[in-house]
Image 1 (cartoon, rainbow, N blue to C red):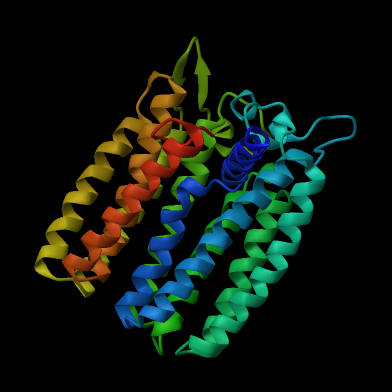
Image 2 (image 1 turned 30 degrees about the vertical axis):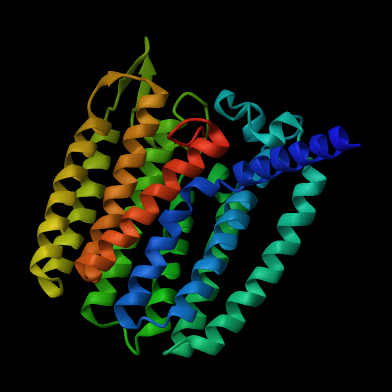
Length: 343
C-alpha cells in the first residue's frame, strides 16, 4: 500500500511539473514585475500587492498555457499538423508528448481563463484608483492576448503587434490601479513596455524559431537565415537595433522624468548590459540555440529591471529583482532541469 501511495505522489508531482511546463511558469517574474512595479510606485497596500501577485501567477500560467495549447491544436492548412508538432524544440513538451491531453488542457485552460477574467474584473472594481481606465485597459489586455494566442502569432507576420499591445495594456491596467492619471511617467512606462515586448517577441522570439519554417516569422522576410550553422541577420539585425534602441531611449526619458540618483545609476548600468546583449543577438555568428536562449533571457531580465529601478526606491527594486531572479532560475531548474527555459 505504501509503495502505491508513493507512486501516486510521484505521479502527482510529475504531472504538476508538466502543467507548469505547459504554462511556462519559469517566466512569471517578467509579467509580475511589469505590474507590481507601477502598483508599488503609486501605493504599497500589502493586501493589494499579494492579491495582484496571486492573480498574475495564475494569469501567466493560463495565458501562456493557452498559447501553447493553440499552437498544439490549430491546423494551419488542411491536412497539415499544428505548428508545435513540427517544431523539434517543442518535441519534449507535455502536449506533444501526450502526457497532458489536448482535451484535458482545453477543459482546465478555458474554464480557468473564464474564472480568472472574472477575478481580475472584481479585483479591479474593488481596488482601482481610476476604475474606468483600469477596466478599459484590462479589456484590451485580454482581448489582444486572446487574439494573439488564437492564431495571430502563427498566421500573421504582424502578429507580434497584438501581444505587444496586450502587455502594454497590462501595464496600463496596473498603473491605473494605483494612479488617478497616466501623466508623463505613466505614458513613457507603457510605451517602454510596448517596445520591450516588441523586441522580445518580434526579434528574440522569431530568432529562436528561425530553424522552423513559419510564415509569420518576420525576420525571415528581412533576410535572416541560418546557413551552414551560422546566423546571418540580413536587415533583421538593423531592425533589432532600431527596436531595442527606441526601447532604451524611452528608458532614458523615464530617467529624466523620475528617478533617484541610485536608481539612475542602476538603470544606466542595466541599459549598458542590454546594449551588450543586443550586440550579441544581432551579430553574424555560429547559431547555438541554447546560447541564444541564455542571451535572450538576459536581455529580457535586464530590460524589465530598468523600469523597476526607475519606478521604485533602491531597496524595493533590489528586493523585487532578487525575488524575480531567484524564482526564474529555481523554477527553470525544477521544471526544465536547466537554468534557462527549454522552449
